[in-house]
Image (tube, rainbow, N blue to C red):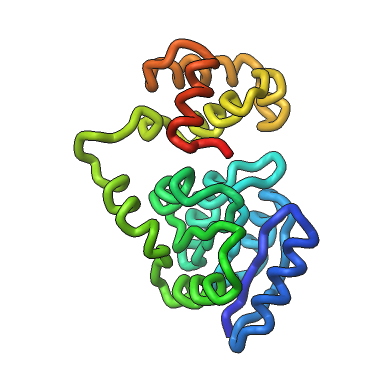
Length: 210
């Protein structure tokens, strides 16, 4: 029996995903979590074969939660499920130790296949993503400027590009405004962009925001 933890802040989505998973033979949803803190608490209390983790939950950076899961329970596979397109987050997720990355538009059969493969120690990559992933994971020339950003910088970058103020970002991420301002400065330096307008234009051109 494959033991699964579903982590997503939307109750209705968790309910639907739970039904999909439990309709499949040999899969059981042991628990659910609605935020990153709950995920880490449950991981400390019980072993799960697979965690299906939403990359965007309130007060949490899914990539940071992923790293903490892998640190505390290395044998637990983590399948990232997101509303964001693959090219936005998949490379960072795999680098952080994810066993797969699917969008919430994935069909039920694909989700089940991904869970089974992850539970066996494999990595699930969609055909469309495989070539992009191979290119992005290389350390050779041709990398785009935003790939040099840390996961937290990339998170702040996207929030700025979405039009949020530094104080709004600070509140959302539970960080100080001065810290967010420092991140913004680093982002501009690393990308070579000059202001928020250029950040937004860049993000749109590279499909980094929806």
